[in-house]
Image (cartoon, one colour):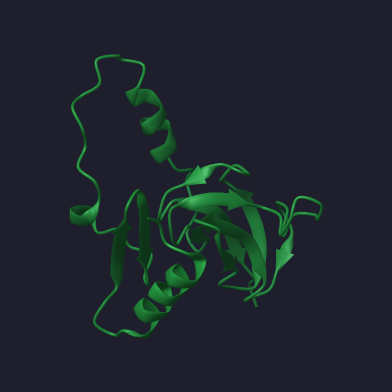
Amino acid sequence: MSLTHKEARRILEILDQTRHLDFLEVRVGDTTLTASKSGTVQRSLEPMAGPTPTKTAQPAPAVAATSEPEMTAGQVAVRATMMGTFYRKPSPDQPSFVEENAAVEAGSPLCLVEAMKLFNTLASPVNGRVVRIVAQDLQMVQRDQLLMIIEPETR
């Protein structure tokens, strides 16, 4: 048994409409739907780590994935709101939403994060310029992972 697209959308609508819930994780069979209103991670609800790997090469990718580039004061971080696949384009045959050094307006789409065929469009929180695109296109991202850095417009 797995969640249908309609069921997943309904669960996300319920989370959005509920004031006392900020985080939700639903497991149906081998499918897990994890959602958060604020984008914060509740560590107590994440899966427990398994036994320590015996190969020393395995921990290295996890360390590399968690290192973030330095941000200067005033820059704005665009972070993943959920775990999923990062897309720079609305579809494979279209250009990227934005490129580095591109001017963006508040509310304009920057990228997509997809989980279980649900596409979440992330919009620019400010008017400004995309300084750096940190995440790699078509790669898995974690909730709250840094995706882009924006330098806000100065007036």
